[in-house]
Length: 289
Image (spheres, helix red, strand yellow):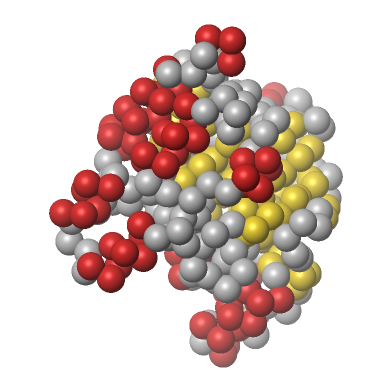
C-alpha cells in the first residue's frame, strides 16, 4: 500500500494520456466549504457537485492542466450549500445539463436566489436505483443516509472501469457497500475524528447532527468498513479519503486510522492500491484509470 497526498507520481496528464484514457477522476475540492469532482473520458466531461465558485473551479482545472472549454453535465448529490453554491455561476460559463432528483431540484430552487435559480434551464431528473448515461459514462445513483432532501451517492462506469463517489453519509448501509464493490477507485468520506469532534468548537446540537446516522462518517466508521473483507473487497487501485473536517479531523489522523484498518485485512484479500487524501484547498492531481 502506498500513501500520498498530492505528489502525483502515479498520475498521468497531457495529450499522450488523453488518447488512452478510460476514466479519469480529478477531485477539485472536498470538504465542508465546497465539493467538486471532475469525471471524464476522452469524449465526456462531467462534474459531481458544484460547491466552488466559477473562478475557483476554473483555477483548479487550470492547475491540473485541464481544459475549461467544455462540460457535458453537472451531477448533484444533494442541496447543501457546499455542493451547490457555485452551480449558477458554472451554468453561466457552461450550458450544461444538471442531473438531480426532483426533490433536490425543488429544494435547490428554493435555496438559490431567483436570478440564479433561473439558470437551471437544462435539467434531467434522476432517481436512486435507475442508471442513466451522460455521453459514454454510465451513472448509477443510489440512496445514502444524510440529512438532506434526497441525497445520493454515485458510481461511474466507462470502458470497463468503475469509480464510486460517496460522501455525506452518517453510516454505511449494506446498499452502499454493495455499490462500492468491484470499483477501480473509491472516493469515500472520512469526515471527523470522534474525540476531536467532542472537544471541538461546534455547538452540541451540531455535534449531535454530525455523529448521527444521517450526519457524516467518522474515521472509526471508515476503519471498520475498510478492515472488513465482507464489506470492503480491497479491489480499488485508488482509495481516496474525502470530505475531511478542518475543525474535527486531520489528514494524518485519517490516514493513520485507514492504514491501520487496511493492515488488519487478511493477507488473501489485502488492499494493494494507493491511499490518497483529498483536500479542501487544492485539487488532487488527476487519477487516470
